[in-house]
Length: 455
Image (cartoon, rainbow, N blue to C red; front, side, top):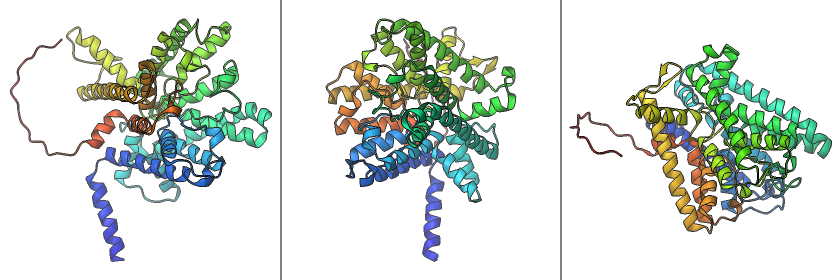
């Protein structure tokens, strides 16, 4: 009894010493390793034999980090058990493992400590504007409603084609995958890959796009819209920025894709099909990873457009990855206002705190640096072009999952690099820096200043 108490006290002292960000980072590692172990079991594969460990690790990391990059065919390689493991990893990874753990605690009526509440709020991207109990209820209710609606709507499409049980499983898998912006699919037996066979199906495209957009909006935005309905002026600043930037990206991305790809991936389509494909690729490129055309055949302009959309990603506190819309918006406004000798960053007549501006610049720099060095490493190891290497690395670090065919052919070293990129992208570039940095007692010093030449 005494040994059990000492062990518990030791664990408590250890958790008290590490930061919230480090706990979240460690939690994702534990989840990835647990998924790897389950996928490595013989009955997780259709053949009944063990899948190579590196393939299991890659797949578990991709599912937990809601990326969607794969090295084996999801439908043909994994058994039903393996696919169930993947969907659980996607669901937990999409919502955040702290959200799921807290929901389990509440379900069994266990007390949630103040520290655990803070962990949940940080993992969900909350700034303290929402009460703990309301946040949990709305995350759970919103997820259940949106994914459940997606399952029902997709079932009307899949069940007549595949039979009731298989059709329902396809509906569940793709609804969860789309809502969590994961990009895993079971479509290979039906199409060459992803949803290419249904590029012109308006019904399927709209359902998937809505699930992706809603999942990528963010839990805090849900709450704001739920409270204030359609009264835009009553929304918080975060919600206003998210909705405006999301709308701009979706509209401009669709128009630009139509222009860039008119003679390439859209060449043999009518105007309706071109609009559908352009809209779907724009939505999916923001971290979902589904695709309805061959991405390796995109023009240089289209390739750059999709790469930029992947880099921006979704919104903070959502199932999406990327640098996030608010980060990019703050950086762009800061640059524009700095050119006019005004250092303040203002949105909707409200000033963004300097600390948030510095954090945005840090995130942008970290993502750019990791993407650059990751591309250099992949191009040095693999026999690929700069275009292919950059696309794959950006897809991994921003947890998108789109590929131009390079992923399954990578060697072990490249796969380990991509695993690290997916992990770094899921916990966030800024969070990764904070998690790796050791706590130090800083001595307050006032250093002398001296100007240097810039530019």
